[in-house]
Image (cartoon, rainbow, N blue to C red; front, side, top):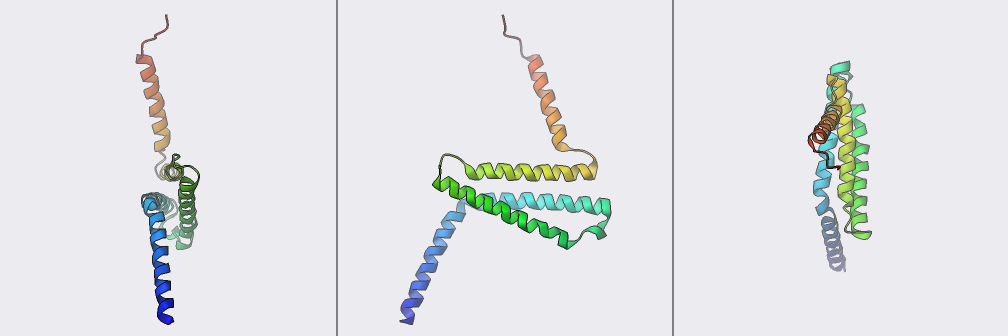
Length: 145
């Protein structure tokens, strides 16, 4: 009786672990991307606090904000995978969520970078893109009669 129950539990756990593994396997890259972006944002914020307020102002209890943000991102990635599997397989929900995460974290890193150096790389990139577009438009011959 006990052997049958143990055998049934081990089979059930095996099936559960294979099912979860097959669900989360395609999400590994997305999770790593989110972790890297949150890590870079956290490091840039620590650098800003260290420079502006001194090293003693860096407190571990302020770093606890990283955990809910990471959990929130992971839940969004999982929900995007569920939407991709159940709603429409043609729409790359996970990639769209990753674009949003990368955009949010890049903007936050840029704010920290601007606080640290007084220089915003996103504003410079936008200015450069506008200048490049203007240069391209000036060089393109007018096709109107």
